[in-house]
Amino acid sequence: MTKQTAREQERGVEELYSLIKTIIKLFAVAFGTIFTYLQLKDTPLNRIGEVFDGQSLIVIALCLYFMGWVIGAGADTDILRTALGRDPQFARLGAIERLAIGTFGVALLLVFALHSIPIVFQLVLMTFVATNVWTWRVIFNRIKPMIDSTAIEWEQRRDNYSYLRLAIMTDYINGSWQRTRFFALFVFAALQVLVACLDRLGHLGQIIGGLTFFGVSGAILANYATGILFLLWVATSEFWMKLYRIKFYSDMKLIAYMENHVDIQRKSKAPLPPLNLRSTFDFTKSDNRNYA
Image (cartoon, rainbow, N blue to C red; front, top):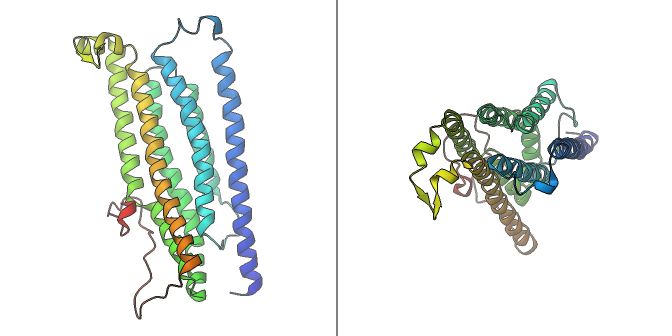
């Protein structure tokens, strides 16, 4: 690789990073403004305590989810930037990447737009999870050449610390924990479809009406069931992601500390840590058990 090509690939990483940040900001402003307007335009604010119900919990959960998504998308972009140093595609987004971003945006919009329609909302939520999985794979396929090119660069430089950052980043982005999380969120969304159907048919109150949860009658909770479940879905999704981001940042802090104090060398004939490039449905546990 010539020095000019290397500089162009480095510039490509910066341009791609800037482009992704811009897209996230546009999503944040557009969705935040539209959703806030739709929620408040017909809301009797002087009677908000009287109209609070399960649907209100869904609205609160949506707001929390959106804030979590904006913060998380920015954090994940920064995570990619900590490890990737080359972009052979020079910051270009292909048709499939543009389609994935657009499809994800539409799916997210539908989740917000149809939240007040029981059963339909829960079905849309399941579709959104599936769309999220597809978008995740498209993004990963887009950065694969960046991973390969960066790995070659670090190997040639014998920059073991940078290579280690890259290996851990691939475990974070493509670890088996990601597949477990998506599967759990999809099943949880399917459970919400079942509960919404029972609620719509009037059976939910009959099923849990005689029960008591932490001193609260099941008959009362039945009115809030769909909202509570979606709030738990959001909490599960965001806390799961947060846990693994903490793991990643902890690993990066340790590497930075070691880099400032210790010079590490590869053992003779020892292979470098493997990069996690598994396919979508490869549920094999990650070699780095911290991301299994």
